[in-house]
Each structure stands twice: as C-alpha cells, then as structure tokens.
Length: 197
Length: 178
Image (tube, rainbow over all chains, first blue to last red; front, top):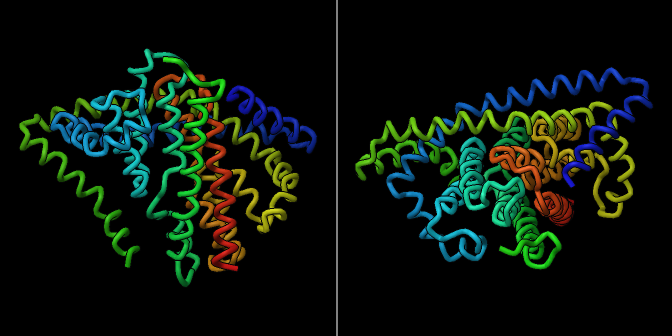
C-alpha cells in the first residue's frame, strides 16, 4: 500500500514534469525536500529532549500510571491488546491530551514514546500492531480545541470574528474521529488485515 | 466565553506542566534532574531515527507538488466539489492536507489573502485546515520512530478520516455560513 502510494507520488510527478518540459523542477524539489526533511528532524531534537525528559519525571513519580488508571475504562476498550498497567497507555493519553490542547510540539514526543512502548509489545516486528493502528486512527483524527495557527492567520488578515471557526472545526473533527474509530474497529475485527494474537 | 477559557488553558498548559510535573516528582523523591536527562537522551536518538523515513516521504510529496501533478489531480477532481456544493478553489487544499503541514498552511493563507478571511472560501479553508491532520507526516514520523515498515490498514483509516473531515467541513460551512 505505502510502497504504491510512494511510487505513484514520485513517478506521476516526474512524468508530468517531463510532459510539461520542465524536468529540472524535479531535481530541485527532490534535493530541497531531502535537505528540508533533515532540518525538520533537527528542529525536533530539542523539543523531543525537553518533553521526554519531563515525561520521564512524570513516569518515575507515578503520574503517568495514575492518569492511565483514571481513563482505564475507555482505554481497555480501545486497546484490548495492551495490558492496562502498561506505560504505553499513559503515553497515549498524554499524546491525545496535548493534541486536543493544540500543543503540537509536545504531542509529537509523547506520540513517539507511545509508539516505542507499543513496539515492545509488538515483539519488534516491522509490521504495525493492531494497537498502533488504533492509536494512529485516534491521533490523526483527534479534536483540536484551539486551532491556534489558523486563528492567527485569520486575525492577521483582519477577520471580524477569527474564532468563529472553532465550533465548526469541533463538529467536523468529531465526525471524522467517529468514522476513524469505527473503521479501525471494523478493520481489526473483520478485515483480511486482522491479526490473531 | 468558552473560547476565552480554552485560550487561557492553552497558554498556561506548558508552563503549568513544566512546574507541576517536576514538583510532584520531587515530592515523590524522584531524582528530578537526573531523570530529566535520562529521558531527554531518548529524545535525541528518536529524532535522528526518523530522518530516512521523512526524507523518503518529503521528497516524493515535494516532486508531486512542484511538478504540477497535484494541479492536474485537483482539476480532474473538480466535478466532485460541484457535487458536494463547495467552491473548487479549496480542492488543492483538500488534496494537500494529508501530505504536508507547511504546504497546506501556505495554501490556506493564500486563499484568505485572495478572498478575505470572512468570505465563504476563507471560512471553509479555515475549517478544513483546523479539522484534519497531516496523516502522511504523522504516519511517517510515528512509524519511523520504531522502524515499522508495513502500515497495514493505518493509511486507509487515516485517509478516510481526512475525507470524512472534509465532507463534514463542507456540510457545516454550507449550513452556517452560506
């Protein structure tokens, strides 16, 4: 699936550029993006270090497990394959909370931590586990209570009511989230991709 | 009112966490500084680990976009927007949304500059931008961090959520802002 999408993006881009007679655009875009990707990662290093450092304190103080215990009724239904006491649960909760508050820079480190914890249950396979798929379904469709960036853009263009879009955003994300969680449930229970543990 | 509350929460969230977590740890007799450093070390290795995955994905997306292939795709899909009763100007935004966060922000900004933030297109673009996530970026980074190469159905779920988010955005904007 991913192999095909990746190839299609690349190949269709190159073919279109060739047909339009501006093939040099491809070289420029490819090299620029390669450089940009590394810059993105290096921008991440500091933020990752900060949040994973803070999270380690929270973990050792027992805060993360306390949080996980509190949300346990929901979490065990969403992630039946993860033991309720597992540190992955706490990291998933932290990631989703940060996402909802629009703290993108804190969400990514917590999310990666969650993936690492889930990977320990996945016997270091190269294939995504069921819990990982559910987590990413939640993560990519998660509600943002404050879409701060877009409010900022609206404000800068002199909108009379820059925050009027918050309600509609919450409505639309809620529907997307509902669909994502239901579809994920269907996939892991009935589809040919399901796994028998 | 609700928004003011939410806004206060988002401004205070980070300072609050930076104070409360170490303080709580200290009271629980956790060696706070040493634990911080121990955790921070993992941050570096994780960030470096995702480089190959991100390079692969960003190069493909960038070539697709710069070559003009994306414009063709959005032109080919124009009948769809008519069907959903949405202006075709927002279509490139919809296609770009799962692929690139900075790309889509640029497009939304451009639409608001051209049509004004309080126009129907401006509002719809804002809602679309605030509704869904950069699915490909998230999958690349998160799976990359643990070396997962087979995503199973995660892409299908993520993209379906994106499409649902768009249709729901169009629906609610037609209802409220037309």
